[in-house]
Image (cartoon, rainbow, N blue to C red; front, side, top):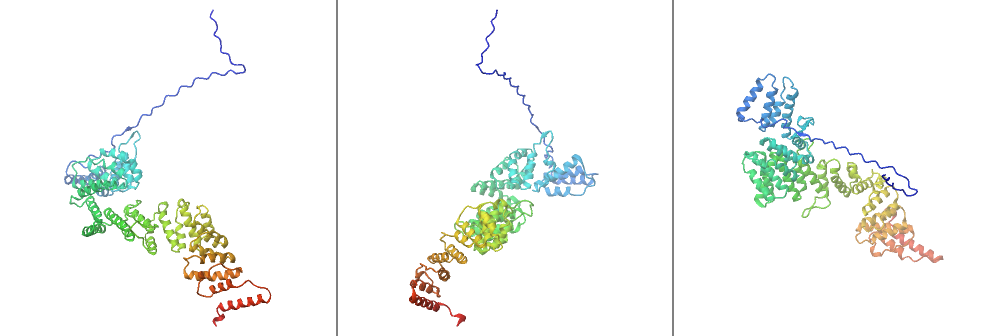
Length: 580
């Protein structure tokens, strides 16, 4: 007989536990197949055609003129213009009235070529453009290229930088002429970002068979990259190659202007000739991108020389914001830089700042370049500091109302706003004290607190804020506050400290001596100020010396005689009544 297997025994008092169920098997992960990449939705290889331009253009225009509806012929002509770089002509022909509005795929084709021409002119397009619409069943390989061009046209360099690697991949399927034009447009939007610029220029590096204008454009972009990366020798080499064509294309003129800018620092006739070339370009092309480039170059040179007023005037002329709505121009950015330098506390080594009156005049003339919002607050804070130093608290307080809420919470801004409120007769001293409550203690905070308390007639509290400060202005202000508060004993002591200051001017010493005499007399106390520190003009110093030399009052008739003698001495020091 098989013996039963012994069961394990639980310890006494232990309860039996339920068996732990086996874990349920994990569900197999559902694999999501990656989206397929679409073929190019609208290949542009045939837009330019194979026939010579002069032969094909009349054929396309005649076909459009003789067509019944003309939408297909219109699209072919517009694509032909874009393929040859005639973007304005393409937009002009597309804007002509049509007998019947096309629909469906034909409408999409017309919208597409219109938006391509707009982007290559640097003009923003609608977010609903067919160029920016993703496919439902696959991923468009060219979508990131159009998104990058749209970001360039709308002035979003950060977005463009993120799209640049995938846009470069999509450029491989674009005809060479259009690829060069697109890279030129993208590079213009990220000229201050050398990493993104290098990525984009990689798409045109292997290009061959370029026209002189195309070669100049590529060398101009290479020169830009070399400048951003600090390779001055490479920059000069690429500029020489770009300017060598002898034509009148924009990249060639850009290169010549940049070469002139490099030579601005040369001494003698060469430097003067370069400056004349820059000014000639600036005047001739002042409303074009080339004029902006020349003006920015010249203004930078003026900034390096410390000619802030001239730099602001040139940067103001370089502003091209009206030509590109919604996009801040390089001239405007440079003007803001010049304003920051103008309102700084110290000038760069070897330079001097203009006189305060000239600083304020230039700020008021060009304050429109202090960008609204937080970006321009540092300029406004610098101007507030200058206005307060010049004794214009009303203007400083008015300017402080433009400070953004985020900046107003910083210690620097809170202190300046509090100073303006405390010093302006129309300001709110209680708001000044509230602002100072968030600022770490400092000498300037104590001074501002004293002014705010004085505005509230809390004079002795105001004087207490200045106690221990040894600057002449602080000593004088503390004594004035105690004198106004009729705290005669404290005022007498404070004026004694002020008269011991060796830097006290003569007129202030005379006023302090007079007030010390009054405070000491009203406090019925002697002063311990040496006679040589008292003002010699007027009778206040002599009066103090009489008071110091007077013996202690006696009793009886001797005390009366002493008091009468002192009265006669004091009366002799007083001015005659009624001017007689």
